[in-house]
Image 1 (cartoon, rainbow, N blue to C red):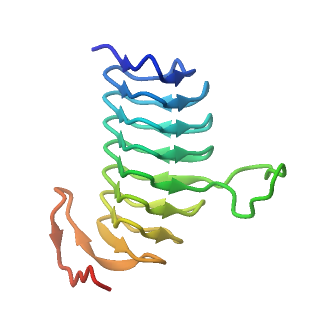
Image 2 (image 1 turned 180 degrees about the horizontal axis):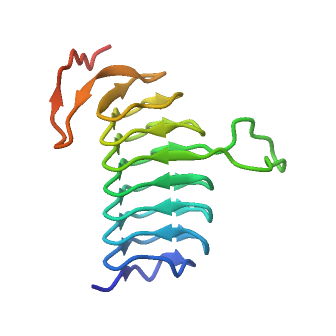
Length: 168
């Protein structure tokens, strides 16, 4: 299956897997690695030192900076923000950017912010608008600002053992 790259996208990388769809107004820099069967929606920016696994969905308005890895089957909601510099300054860059890892099957809700250097565990669910400031274990539901543990989710995506209160 061929890739479908919109003619208004700027895909500089040759490392884009089969069946991946890239919508208009995306920029994917030269050294980025994108897996198979991904759906990269409009207005997404992907920097050089980024790895995106297979079957990943990235909704509109997401920027994925150097040091971020998304494993297979990850969902990234609209306008999710990743950071990679814990002490940002104009025109002053760290020697090494902090690494962020989103493990297989994890989902990140719209407008969440993932602070650099953290890991989101396998199949974890991050609620919309959350700010992730620490590592999130596998199969857990976290949301809020800062995000806190609110329940559990199984490998099939069903909430279980939960006292979720979305009004907190």
